[in-house]
Each structure stands twice: as structure tokens, then as C-alpha cells.
Length: 108
Image 1 (cartoon, rainbow, N blue to C red):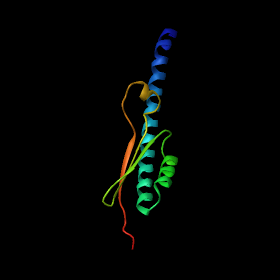
Image 2: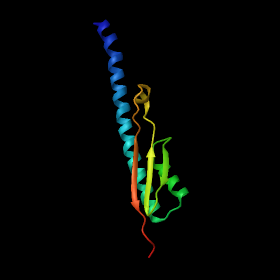
Image 3: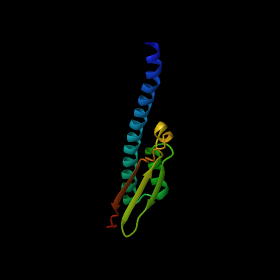
Image 4: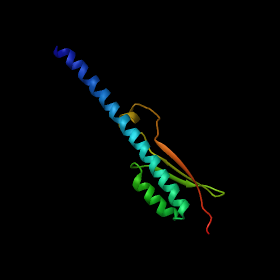
């Protein structure tokens, strides 16, 4: 009985750790989506790029990359982060990211 537990316990712990990392990756994906949406909204309102970067960085996962851009009245905010924990160690190339678009309003 002890030998079976000794073999099964590490496998069970590995599965739990991978599952928790996957849940963390989904949470990071949601944070990226929310941060990109907020960034696009702020840019459309006319906030400066620095203010937008600060707010997006505050709402993004740690170490997230933020790209602001757009042309012709279109605004684009892209937020991406590295996969967390064991997901990255397993060589999975998942990268939580989000892109938000907005149309800049012309001043009245």
C-alpha cells in the first residue's frame, strides 16, 4: 500500500499543480481582456498615452506587455503576458493576450 501511495502522490501533485497553473492562465487572460478594453476606452476619451499605459499596467498581470496604436480614427490596445507557472515550464506556448478596438470620437 505504501509503495502505491509513493508512486501516485507525486503524479497527483503534478496534475493539481498543472491544473492550478491553467486556472491562473485563464485568470490572466481575463485580466488582459479587461486591461485592453479599459486602455482602448481611455485612448478614445483622449487620455495621454502615458496615462493609458499606467492604468493598463495597473490592471494587467505582472510583466504584461502593452502596445498602443491605431490610425484613421481606430484605436488599438494589445495586452499580452507570459503563461504562468508550470504551463510555461512544460513548454506550452500559450500567451494570454487581448486586443481592443475603439473609434475615436471627433471633438464637438
